[in-house]
Image (cartoon, rainbow, N blue to C red; front, top):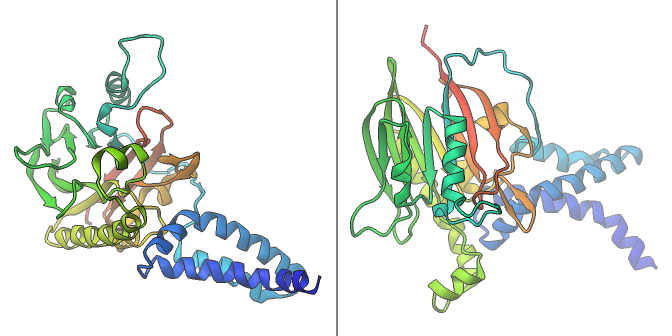
Length: 335
């Protein structure tokens, strides 16, 4: 009985300690420990809220430290954005979508319906000015309505395919190749009226979590080594992107599938000095991926201060393992 009482008394300290360790893991690579905390931080925060409430009633105000630390280092995982006061008439829209090579199985009574046809219908209905796709496929080249298109396909190069479609002229384009992986980044400099913005279509290192993929594509696969190595690769890739972006003098958007939550080192590295459209104008939990029905935000739109986010929208389509995000923005003019 004494042991149970002792554990109950120490439990708030343990919960606060978990949150502090979770925050540290977004700065320091603890391998699989960092992966664990990047996924569970919302749950640990909720536990800390209960600890804080308990501390207020018991006048133990030190129990509030977990909640305070969370808000110092992280944005809340549920957003309540007010209606934008910025006119959307002349705004530019961007849609980012990991389409899973258009191979996702869908439920439809029409045998002609498939992920590709439904995704094309969706894109046409949303009609973004800029469309970026991750894990694309050759059939993406059939998407119409975009006079400018940068497709990442290169002969004899085994990389996951990426697209940047634009209604505005693409005046420059290129690749950021990551070593020893199929993931990568492409970028396009897009001329919009008097401004040129650089859009990075980002697909950071993927986690191999599917038993089927492991069994059929990898020999001697070590699941734990994969988790440990993936986070290290993501951080290196994120730093490589930001270093590349430094050499561009104009406005920058980094968007796509980061394969990382907002509580990860790679997200922190990419977001440094940039705004997150979901934090600025999103609503709800911002889910773009679910693993065993656990909601995760893995897809992002980050931009520098001169790009003003007008609206952020998440969709629930079930046409891929990811969900798309659509962002409207304006480019601030210098006075």
